Amino acid sequence: MFAVVRCGGRQYKVGEGDVIFVDRLPMEAGQEVILDEVLMVGEKGVSSVGSPLVSGAAVTAKVLEQARSSKIIVFKKKRRKNYRRKLGHRQDLTVLRITGIAGEGGKKLTSAAKAVAKKTAPKTEATKKPAAKKTAPKVEAAKKPAAKTAAPKAKVAKKSTGEKAPAKKAAPKRASADKKAAGKPGAKPAAKSKK
Image 1 (tube, helix red, strand yellow):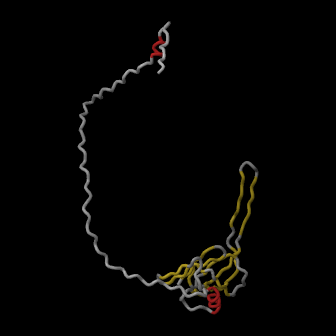
Image 2: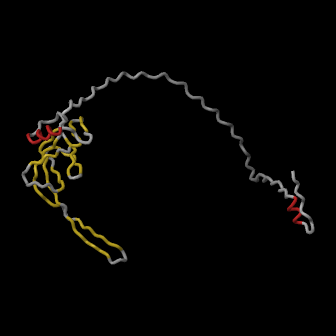
Image 3: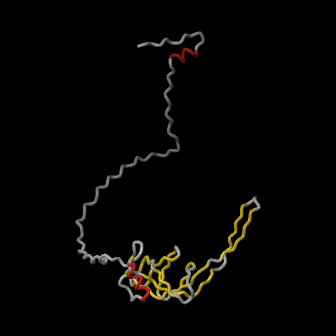
């Protein structure tokens, strides 16, 4: 059986007996912790996903120790500004060993987890799982006639003799009467007709 729990803003997939490192919890070594923010519970291919939490589910864990993670270096620099800052950081952690997982109709609950399950369980009628649908045998559909394909157009083969085809000559542009008149010295522009 496994569960996905949320602790300290992070999600962890856990199984019974797993050891996880979470952000520092205000507990002492040897105390029991109940993680009641369970997002998913699963066992042998069957899983139940909450929206967002699975009602009545809880994960119990035992605090092994309070620890710190390995040091990381935080280095800041702004080039050409003579600005450099070097800091180290060690995150405070709590080491947990998962002792039990309880879900909707799952394994037996520990006494502490039973109390949480009763508080978080909805007071309305229990959610029912939909019955498995019977699938009817598939009937082969009648084959549709194949779509008619258009006959390919016959391509006209051009003989390549190495000669280029003659280029089309452009028709000469007609100049307006004003331009013709303007090109000749002493000529008067053509009179515009008013209609």
